[in-house]
Structure formats: C-alpha cells, structure tokens
Amino acid sequence: MLVIGAGPIGQMHMQLAVRADAAPVIVVEPNAQRAALAKELGADFVVTDPAQIDATVRAATDGSGVDVAIESVDSTELYEQAFTLIRPGGRVIAFGLAKPGHTFRITALDFVLREQGVQGSVAGMGDDMHGAATLLGYRRVDVAPFLTTIYRLDDVQAAFKRLAEDKSVLKVQLQIA
Image (cartoon, rainbow, N blue to C red):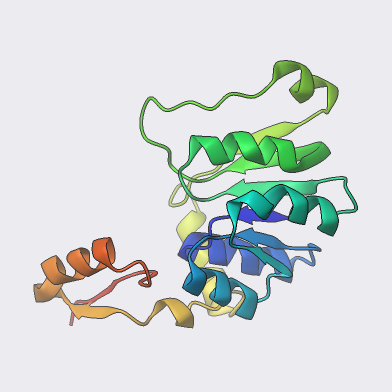
C-alpha cells in the first residue's frame, strides 16, 4: 500500500492500511513533522524526498510495485506517478481533490496491458460519516495527534490564518461550547 500525502486523511488511510495487515505500508510526505508522525503511527517506510519515491517502492516490493496507491493530496502529477508505482493488476484510489478542470494522463497501452484500475473516492457521502464514527468509536484510528490546535469559535479567523501559514498544523478544531 502506498499513501501519497500524510495530512490527517492520509494518516488515517495509512492507519487503516496497517490495521488491515497491508504490508509494506509506504507513505510519501515531504513535510518532516507529518512524515515523523506517519512513522510513529505505523508506516513501514516514509519517503520525504520526492526523488526517492520510485526507488523506495521498488525496493520495498521486490520491484513489483504496490497493490494499491492512494493519492490523498490534490496533485495531478502525483496521480500520474501513482500509476507507475502500482503492480500489474494494481489500482490507484483517487481521493485528493484536484482543482476543477485539472486532468491527469495515463498511458492507455500500459493501463490495458498492466490491467491497472482506478477508483474515485470522496468522504462525506452516504454512510461515510457513520462508518467513520464507528471506526473512531472502536479506536481503529488514532486521531489524538490531530487534536493539538484548538480555537474558540469566536477566534475562527485566527484559526484559518494559522492553518494557512503554519505547515506544522494538521487540523484546526473549533470549540463551539
């Protein structure tokens, strides 16, 4: 399993992959703090240098590529790269929300001959919230590392400013009461 991006969603994808006994679980994250957290929460390999992604995936999978790559950033370039990192018969799960109008390209011949798959996935649809609450209730994911930046609701502007400017912040929680 390859998880591209170790923001809160990528961290949860990674934790669930570990819980599902995927091995190895490889995370790509250039931010040092997020990368360290991914390692602490169970990733087998963490790649911080984009130039090392291919070599790490090949070494960790004996050259075959990963079964599944989840793109949880929002980069069409990373979507394209994900297809080069999956094994024949593997699939890319498209989770990161790219900007409207952005597209990614795949080589049709490789896509067919390597029997690759792609699946779109979006949070917050249908029973997603119920499923997420169930996972939290049974402590299948550790969200405590994300609960470090808490603002009162009347400080919402400061919260958004900090989130935009401080790359060490994973999520901002607004305290309503």
